[in-house]
Image (cartoon, rainbow, N blue to C red; front, side, top):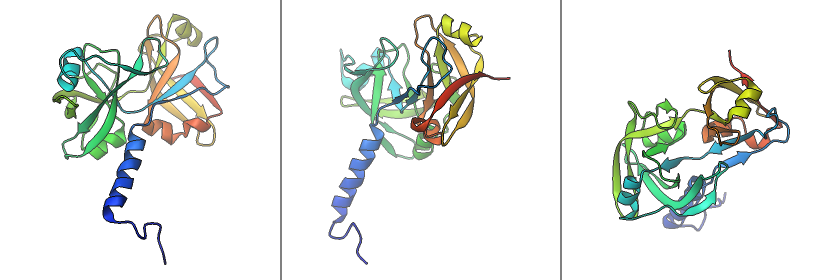
Length: 232
């Protein structure tokens, strides 16, 4: 019996694996906009947020050198936010590495790494489920950039699924900032996600954020309808 690897040496196979892994790791976030939704006057979109990092200016300069600035790779859904061209490598306590993790801009007043549950298992990190910016009792990680390395003591989280709303959106759904909702994804792999936290900002577009594990679980790209529903 022949195999597809016949005639390939070990180095060639390892190179193919690295190439496939890197292609998977640098995949961008996916914004899904089913035509059927209950967003009211504003379109309801769901963003499958890939692993990424937010940095302070101080951390950025440790990783990329004095005076470093984030350069735009592409705009994100929310005005003023963007995926930068800057990539870093993450090294966990098992000495396993996830390469080419993208930094999102603009810079913030804190440094934070957001990973999926699967990422945490791979790296050997027990990820707490948190809203962005809540770093109490969170673990750390080593971040390696082209200029230097950052040994984070805290700030590694699995982001709690949430929905960004302005005042008009909250009035439409009858909810308040900090309240929990349910996200119903209908389709071949339809599911209902509980505990979607409302996050208010006067200038945001209506957008739900879930991570890659959650997006894969419901095969979000095949969704036929999405709804935000009250949670008891």
